[in-house]
Image 1 (tube, rainbow, N blue to C red):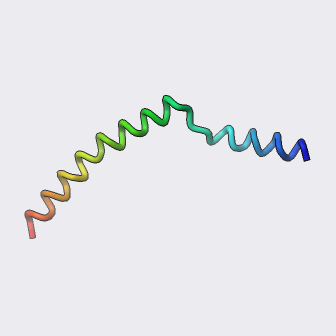
Image 2: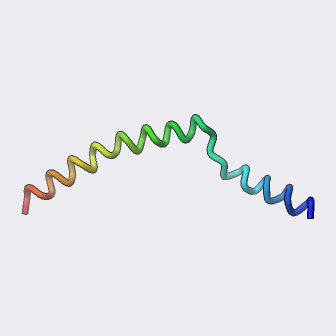
Image 3: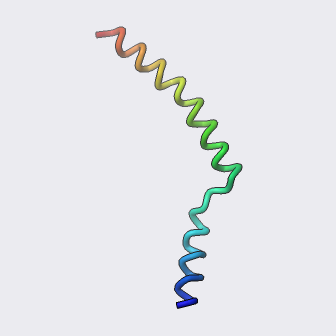
Length: 47
């Protein structure tokens, strides 16, 4: 059982996101949100 637990931990660790990586992703998402809002405004104006 211990080998399964440690192997699962190693597998999960490969997909873990560090705090600074998460902070970077949040900044990117916030930046892209501007384009989303702009695109919605442009799209609604062309109908």
